[in-house]
Length: 158
Image 1 (cartoon, rainbow, N blue to C red):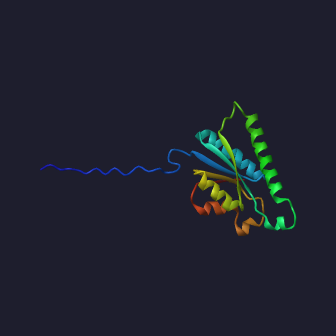
Image 2 (image 1 turned 135 degrees about the vertical axis):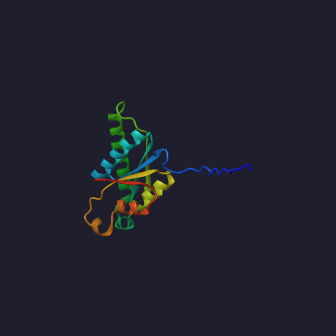
């Protein structure tokens, strides 16, 4: 009697992060901790040969617009300043520290903006700076909310 074994080959499907990250998202807002997070993410991206997607979420401040404050202009200036700082840092390290990077701007609150960015960019990991605001110990920071979302590994840089 001959015994036959059926071989089941599972359908191969794409799974994020299984061969190392391809896209690392770093959230920046100009704060010291967010800039340290971007530097840390750049090191990860370089070592993993991944794309570094630097993301700035422009706040939507309806109250500021109602008061006549030029909110859109201010947030555009912040975005331009962040790009300039990142370019300057990349140029200083050219030849020593090479990393592929892109800069993206999303609109909204920081948490929802970073979630949207990570989803749209198909992020394998998200890196953010620790909150520098005291109130976040009580109500939760963007970093804590991202961790609780549970869709990507999240690194919080102090």
